[in-house]
Image (tube, rainbow, N blue to C red; front, top):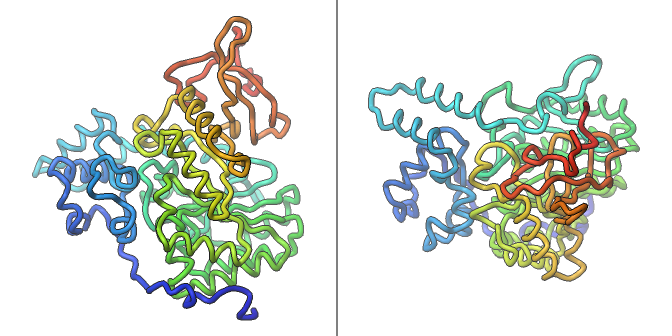
Length: 444
């Protein structure tokens, strides 16, 4: 590759910084934690024994406002809070941890039992989304929608930090039966060669960009060099722009990573980075903005998505600012999601009618360039369902909904109605309107 195809990392004048993971084992050693009360520290220990907890030195030093604890949204996004477990689950774990005679095995057993009650793999991920190749179920892939295959490279099934709301929290527990992962690039290539209806491959996790660039290149080359002309789009789901923007600038293989991206684009394919920005502050640091600039200079498209989360971004002003900042930096607002029915949904979930109001009010505050965003949307078992609004039809208050994507492509774009339910957080909380026994996509 010609050295002028993109700016080398040293021209960005970013000092090299060493990544330092902060976990349940060492979080009490960081100076900022001294601002927490004993009750808050104990809550982190209790909840962190059930739900995965990891953050890092960049987040602690540059993103969290430690003068606004415990209400700071980035703090809540990274550090477990007491309310993230339901009271009976919290009290059970707290009693075990308080009791000095409790063994580590007893704590692990109780944590596992609680996790199994939290719907660890929602929406048919284990049962319905795994594809087959030559009669064998593939553990590290999902093929839910006709055009798109999700690939979970085994080396990318962790993250620079764990979001407390993450719907894939079970990936990080070390429980094999709950985990998606595979390392066989040739199996990915074989599957795609047999499925010419597929146009898009989404590398996901975890976070694929926690991998070394040479490892990622192996997987990308399997597509680029694999006689797969029907694969036109490659997507990479990542939180690295928020949680470790040095990945694109000063990490030792940052230039190699840019070269890999450039190779994808030179092959004639579209490369999209599916970036997760949950709050405007995440993209306001100088290093995050330089990372965005470098990716755009290479030719990578950045699409931004986030769930709507109580305690973090359940405010139309926050969303409007987020979308404006994304457009200003050359990114594309893509999705506002509904918090999935797993993990701490009871803590983060926003009722569907309020989610629609927040989306609508934020949408009204931005120009047309930001109105590429879609939502609020539920990535449910049958597909991605958008809440179009509240209506009065036949003297009945109803939700108007439609599929943006679906297991059955014939469902896409078809509007349907659900009875208004004030406390509904998810599709399973809704009932068909007008006395219908089931929604049109449900089998008798």
